[in-house]
Length: 463
Image 1 (cartoon, rainbow, N blue to C red):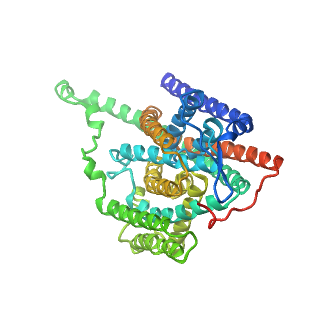
Image 2 (image 1 turned 180 degrees about the vertical axis):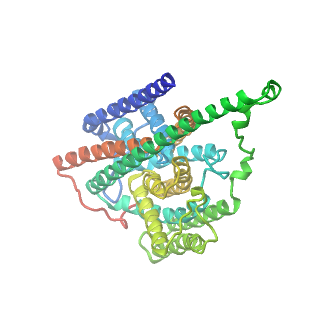
Image 3 (image 1 turned 90 degrees about the horizontal axis):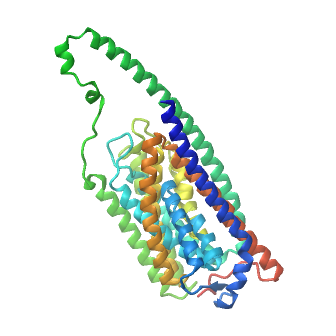
């Protein structure tokens, strides 16, 4: 038993070393940010809003190779933690590939959509770790998802308006706080798992002693017909993929997504800041708000419940439901503003609700798939990213996310600790604060040195 524990601990330490080395390598790239920005300066073009976009040519070389490797790491870790990996994509796109910060956020959304979609495809085939139900909590997704998409629209607009220095401050404050919060939750979960494993070991030893006593009192004939190991194994009932999909809830979410998408497309064919433009924007509020309120009322009256908590069901109050919807809007705003996944906020929130780490990650990723794809469409309509680069990196993240899910499932089976998902979430958020914050500081210093404009931009002047 000690040898087995030692080998598992050694494997866990090796994984930690790989993560730390990867983060150090990524952090070291920040030092060359100014040189890379100047190197690509001849490719800059100005929009009518005054913001300079940098779209490097897609040529095979060290930049695209290193960028692909970092994107693979971000997709794998992001899919595990349920956060998408945008905090790693954006610095890579800006520092390695050579995109400007805001175009990096747009391309990042394409990569998040690929990783999230692949993860959902994988999770649809998975079951809840302890209960006989899907690993994705559809009621939780239906409560959060519509408001998340509403927040995305606001976030994309803020991405156009806000200056880089303000975005940098928000990144540092938000993600350092969330990473610390998740780390503490991971430590708490690790301690609970340690206690559970200890109790399970003691119970198994006691059972073995009782079985030995009973076997010694049995006759040889009865001994030959007993198979204690088989009796201890509890086989979970078989299920099909269709059993893991709640078609009514899924159809409801798709319907909301289609309506909001139609409003966004219609808005693109209007004059910016015109009366019709604002009407189409405001129409998103009753669509998203109505869907979330519908689910909130069902949860409040007990018609539906957060089933993934099992017997520890939550008696949700009105102020709690309002708070959760507000968190979903904030998550959407942050996701659209920074080009990252809304799972950075939904993941820790779901953990605080008492969801198992696997359910938290799967449900956050499920919700993020809709919101990220919505951002991709909005950024595409705003012509914020080059399609060839976006398609290539989309494919990279799809493959990497699937590999990451397979690896983490094996790791959880070996270690018996789902808390590794929470630690991955915490590390990814800390890396986001480090990388995005470092990138923003470098850009801020560069703008100050060149006495560039650092105020707010006009949404109405943007084309």
